[in-house]
Length: 253
Image (cartoon, rainbow, N blue to C red; front, top):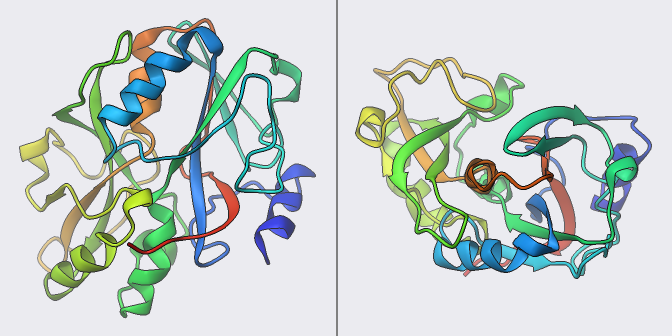
């Protein structure tokens, strides 16, 4: 399907699974929605932490149609999460009932965008093979603080064969609006990950550690993590692994 057709399936709740592998070559985006009083500080946080939070669009207060997609951000993602005062409340399939005119929406690049390029190089992605949401982990890597927004980086992981790693780095470094190259390779304990079988978000993948190396990329769930520390009265995000598919073709730097 093209992006518009796929978003329509999400809008009318005919489908609500992970967007990994959908609409090849089109930019996918994480989403954070905050009350306007938090918007400047969060924008500053993103600018200070571009590896985790590469901004692809910022909507004016109350606006629901982004510049990069013929979409309604209240309905056209497969799943959303609602948080209040720094606590998770619920996961829903649209956010029309909670929408407010003072909401500012941020769209942030997603690593799903470069997965097609890795597949074209002959790498198989185990989370797609196993029909799982890519595993994501909180780390001990500090982000640069901006006002009330402070915390550590979240990463997504793909387990690759040793001979694939160098090529994966070269391929993904071209996608600067989608986190770029990896931030860490191997030795997950060095970045504070003690158990790969227990991701903080997404689902664990099965792989032989003697045959594959875990490779970690910056992840757009990072802003969810730091926004919880800010304890806004309400924050809305995409559900991890369930992105906005845009009409914009990915630009390879």
